[in-house]
Amino acid sequence: MSNKRFLIIAGPCALENEEIPLQVAEKIKELSKAYPQFEFVFKGSFDKANRTSVYSFRGVGLQKGLEILKRIKEKYGLKTTTDVHETWQVKPVAEVVDIVQIPAFLCRQTDLLLESAKYAKAVNVKKGQFLAPWDTKYIVEKLTYGGAKEIYLTERGTTFGYNNLVVDFRSLPIMGQFAKVIYDATHSVQMPGGQGSSSGGMREFIFPLLRAALAVGVDGVFMEVHPNPPEAKSDSATQIYLKDLPFVLEFIAETKPILEKYWDKQLS
Image 1: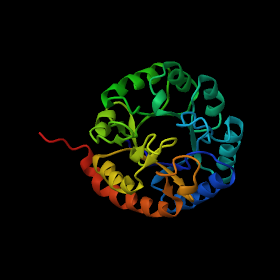
Image 2: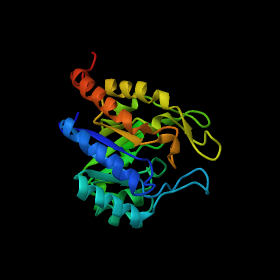
Image 3: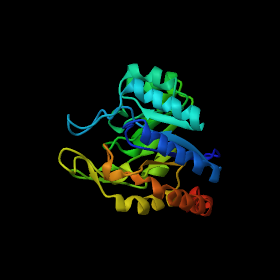
Image 4: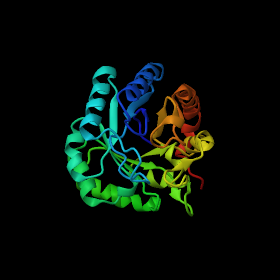
């Protein structure tokens, strides 16, 4: 496992406006003082390009999104991340954020990976819902070929029939052979298209599966948080309530040191 501080990537699914991201960022900054053992990264998407319906809210757009992320960095001193969907977006995004994220559905897009490797300080790739964990080595191979400086792979569930995802926790140590591994605590309980024109999810399983991921061993946790998830314009069924974030961090802080000594143990 990495000797760096445990990564906590947190923030709203979509950058809906200026108010909500700043409210979340302020809380994350406050919590970062209480948990110096964690490295906090604020997450927010300027465009949700793969929404189920063409009528669904997508975000504030690239220019406004980068303005919000810049403001968060300047006001709160937090590192930031956002996702890119096309090669032309990579350079301007990489000039602002600390980690460029590749969405799961685009995890095999060679040109997008190479462009991100060229410009980004770090690249985080969401493992596709369709991809075997051992095949992520080819993603890392592409990024390494492109000169990536720091690489993360994120587990966010695997397609299990229609409108459902499951997490195969074997994927965490498998992917850990190739790069640092992040567990996505909120997308892993998503039900894609489960509400017809939008995705559903089972928020009640976020915490049990997070406990399982910590037991298996990861380098960080990704979680989308919102002041009022039911009113969120994207992923309303799976975002964590902002008021619950302190509890989640307290659990990670108390549990991780106990489990960490067992993470790399192998039975003969």
